[in-house]
Length: 215
Ligand SMILES: [Zn+2]
Ligand SMILES: [Zn+2]
Image 1: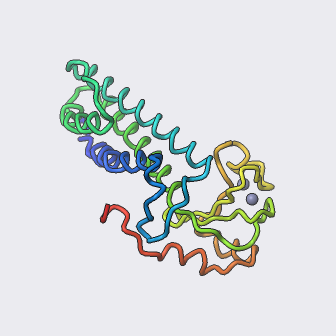
Image 2: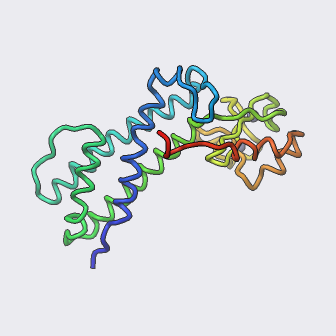
């Protein structure tokens, strides 16, 4: 029995909604617009963040083309015409019933895992471009005034690209694009250590934002 790939539909739907937001993050016109929270955004996200967004855009664009072509080939339907990522995603969603009915369950599995991977990557990149809020105090590892809280991701990052912590196993060592991060559970300890006010971290989270509703 082949499970119906409804989770694939959920993830493809998320991608369809979030991909245009990613494109907007790189658009120069964004610079002049105030953020939904009422603050004016800086002229552009910082360089490593922009790089992450443009990498993600390219990865998802290629991934969606490959996925649609693979699905059409397996379903023996004609090679899809050119189209935007949004058009391709819409066509893929329309093919999901046939994907689920395909005798080989590995096709539905492939669609699910690719859809999930791309949706996660897209959300992660969007999380990275949300307006970071400066945290007072110095980074425990590099002593720079470089701590920022990313409220939606519930993460504090040290944005100094050269910063590495003492733990050789930490991702800030193995992955050049990764910055040392403190997850929510570590915030109290972090705030104590850098003598920041823990309320400063959580206040950013409580800020009203209209993500996904007013835009
Ligand atoms: Zn640091
Ligand atoms: Zn680290």
